[in-house]
Image (cartoon, rainbow over all chains, first blue to last red; front, side):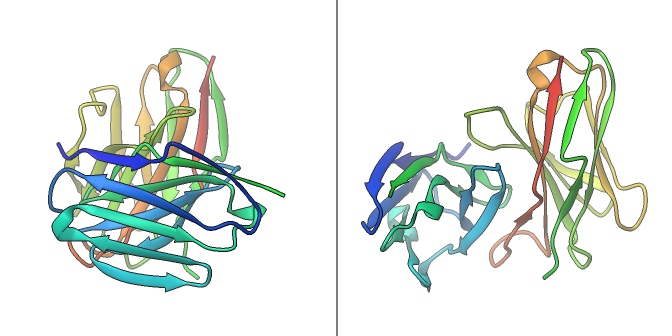
Length: 105
Length: 115
């Protein structure tokens, strides 16, 4: 099956810093979503982005489907951004291993 | 805004017992999914369901598991004879369609603890 790798596995930043999270996948995909898992375990939809670029406030995402990767950008980090960020690809949503982001006040 | 709802939010059960996890997908969605997340690990696909039948299942989804849409709104996951290793967060999800252009939405999860 398709392999999904995320990097870095852990990221600790000061409040206000910017970050880039990466998702690599091993085969072409029709679907790609980014999620934020908050400290209560809920999976929050961030972006549906099988290709192209989208922005939503301080967050933006870019998927280069031909090169099999996606990037999630978080600008001006806030403590509420802490949690685990997952990308998931393809029709049945194969999840990556996640990036744990910790924002320090 | 429409959302996927799951009940219960927490369930504790004794090893060997049967549990039923319940989900109400978004009303106009046609595809339904169950996923599992063992503590500290990634989210794993279990099964997808469309038109009252399983459309795909993972190797995790063995004879211990079953899914059902008992009425027009509920979608359930049954785990027979639970084992300690079934302890996990279980997520239900739904989507309008399948394939390109389709976004899936997740419920808040049911945390299952088998003791």
